[in-house]
Image (cartoon, rainbow, N blue to C red; front, top):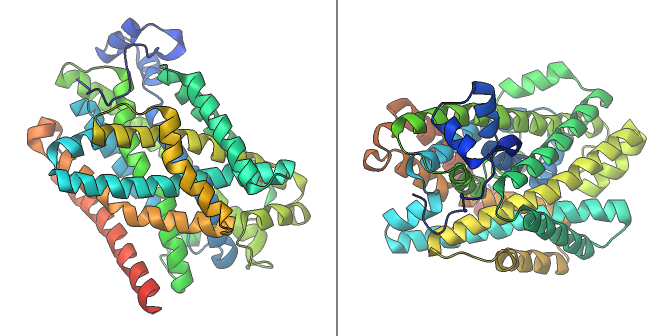
Amino acid sequence: MASDASFPVDNVPAAGGMSHAALRDAIAGRRGRIVTGWMFTGPAVVASIAYIDPGNFATNIQAGAKYGYTLLWVVLSANLIAMLFQALSAKLGIVTGRNLAELARERFPWPLALVMWIVSEIAAIATDLAEFLGGAIGFSLLFGMSLLTGMAATAVITYGILMFNGERFRRIELVVGLFVAVIGVCYVVELFIAPVNWGGAMAGLVTPQIADADALLIAVGIVGATVMPHAIYLHSALTQSRGVLNSDAERERVLRFSNREVIIALALAGVVNMAMVIMAAAAFNAGNPEVAEIETAYHMLTPLLGGAAATAFLISLLASGVSSSVVGTMAGQVIMQGFFRRRIPIWLRRLVTMVPAFAIVAMGVGATQALVMSQVVLSLALPFPMIALIVLSSDRALMGRFANGRLTKIAALVGAAVILVLNAVLLYHTAFGG
């Protein structure tokens, strides 16, 4: 049974307006596969918005503009790691009925749990900074607002969507799913317009290379923008909205649907990320490799590719900023409630990470520079939830027969090692300029 820190499940409506009893029928295997699959679609879709948030726009534009297609392999690798860890997070929530933050607080020594919470809050501030800035840049380009005014508009819209959701979690899943679809369609349009070198793109996907220290910084930013700490925490909580599972057979059934959803949702998010790099490479690398700012990219798209490309870019940026801000707030609640075992009002959760984000912008830090650096901060914070997730999901006393097998454990450790090595090299270059 989920603890008090979990999201409420009693009033969660099933998909298509079905009753909670229908959801129980699906869990018990008394519904068809298509209906059951639809009813359990949502958690991975919500988590996937973390992989196409404004931080991705910043790092992907810089990657494509400066290095062409050569960093596409980083996007692909990060997406594969993300799939594995989101699947493990979902499994942890499905099997235990509790989320990662709750279990870390319960099963780790309090000093370690405290460190995890502090690091997670720093990551949440970096996440909010990226999400607010994405929405603010979009509103600024669309209406001529200042960044601070655009951030305020993003905050108001985010709060309104969260209030619309209320206790009905399915609404958020549908709203975020709509935003994901809008972003995806916009980038399909971009790829049809941009003069893509598909041979170069395919080579970039399968040929690992890091040209220089700047490429390394962008690569770490891509990882930080793709495999995100708050998404790992959140996914384990999203599964709790489907109710309590009473047997291993029910858990196994729900896990099958969850794994399929993770693969599909994150594959689509990965394709969108690759499309961002490909569009930037096709539009800017040959003649304008210095393009690094989101605003500059928007203004240059019209003369280079036409108004339709610029409009699609702006719509996708706005959709990304607003939806990822919603998801970031949800993740922040999960983290704080899980570690402190108390329900946190949405307005308080918003203030905790929103105020530092506003302060950074008020200090005059460049928007895209802040976005890229926020992703580096996220990458440095990532090992904490990753390692905790590996430990907990491999614990046979906690997970029973669903504990990670040898191959899964090895794959997860390799993924975590990749993150740790990238971080170590980044810190070395930052400290010594080597």
